[in-house]
Amino acid sequence: MANVSKRFWFQLHGWFSLPVWVLFCFICITGTLSVVSHELTWLTNPAARASNPNNLPAKPIDELIAAVEQLHPTADITSVLVYEPYLVNAIIFTDHNKPQAIAYVNQYTGQIQAVNQGITFIGFMRALHGWLLLPWQSGYSVGYYLVSAMAIVMFGALATGLIIYKNFWRAFTQPKLRFNQGKKTLLKDLHSLAGVWSMWFLLIMSLTGFWYLTQAIMWHNEIDIEEHSPLVSAADLPTSKTVPAISLSQALQLTKQQFTDFEPHYIMFPEHSRGMYSISGSNNTIFYDNYAFSTTINPWTGELVQTKSPESMSALQTISHIADPLHYGTIGGIWTKLVWFVFGVILSGMSITGFMMWRSKLAKITKAQLLTTDYIQEAQ
Image 1 (cartoon, rainbow, N blue to C red):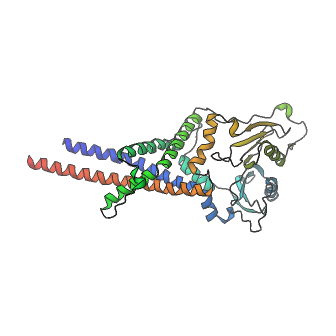
Image 2 (image 1 turned 90 degrees about the vertical axis):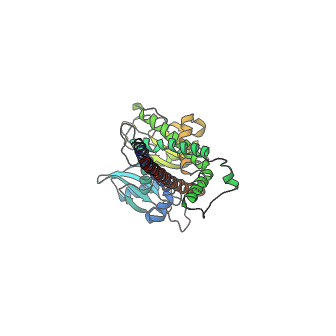
Image 3 (image 1 turned 180 degrees about the vertical axis):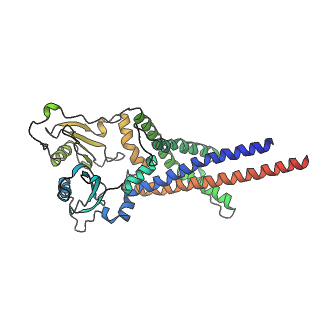
């Protein structure tokens, strides 16, 4: 009876671990797809492609906004997203019959190629991978905690795997794949070889995952990493003007004067009369994301209220702006994204082969325990 009870608890422990494996595998797969979500969007959605057969230069952003306002005269433009050169600019607006809409505007021709009122594929994949589409409330999401906590699982798997795999470094110079010694041996070789060659990738995913977990805790406890944009002083508000004195093009020009080779990637318009322009972008600085350089500009006076760049960042802000490029492989453009995609596929495969090996071992142990139990019963 004692042996049966022990077997039962061992099996129950294994099946309780199954949801963790399923979640980990799901996160690996969605993360792998998120890495190339921009490229998949270009491949599957013709309206999102910024075709430029005549090699035209990109139009100023305010011209693209004017095109949207011409089509939707009552639209209230809230923000602009600038992606890679092969994708259209996304101009986000609200209207009386559109609570939130995204206009896909070709930055070379000025043509509005589509107006989307739902979530984009890029946004969907980021939300699915980042917080499992679970809701946010009071500054936190249970899904975000679950996903970032997988960093502990990943780092634990890396550390214990290197302990179990003796002389693992030989896999670099003497890789071993035995195809003629059965399924179990082949699975073990595939899993071990993939793990050794993916050590650097597992370490990067673990470290960035630990940061996301730390970030989640800080958000939950209302600890700010980035400064909030200040409000326009009441003294700066005009008594008669209803249109800001500083246009978007002027605000962009001020930002480009502040940062050499600045390329805008996100523009947020003032939300109300005391709001400010918030402009974020990059200047080809490696390892930093597309929002590492930013300005906050008073729309009534043209004053440069806040600036941010890698040189002025705190330690936490620096980590915040290098985590995503390392996690999603955007540090070197399409080529590093392809490398991250390949190793993401490998990591997803490792989670599957690891589970298959666990199931095989569980079946073997169970069979051995059954034989032992039968032998004891016969002896009695």
